[in-house]
Image (cartoon, rainbow, N blue to C red; front, top):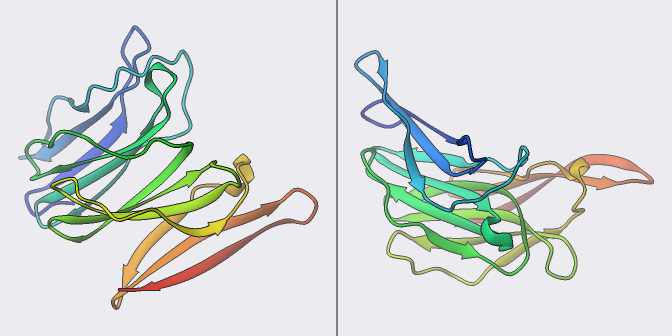
Length: 183
């Protein structure tokens, strides 16, 4: 929800199997026509599990997503003022598996988390400004790359960021873990 109405982000699909991220807005009791956030041109003849995450603060919107266009895995973000999105910014292109989440700290600053497979699979996050400046990635926890590990989530409460994820081990099953980061 933005101050001017609902906005919904999703992975769109063309007849040519291009899977770019698009959005629609709900204003005056009507949904807008779809608009593309970023022309990644990811051609994949199947359903990628990774969808976008979208968050808002007032009329500022941040959308983060995973793409593997041309075989190059990336996590990206774009900021919007509820009308149009900025040029996308690459968050990570080392070995991301996706499973992103995003929260806004203020109207220019977001935190993006994702699952990475550089060496040992891990949940990482970094802070990024709308001008493209960002911190180095931080590891929240090692995890499993299996689907059983799910999609890590973040939320902000009382000047703390909470990360929640499924710790999945084939031999012992799964449990939900939580980590707190003070701002």
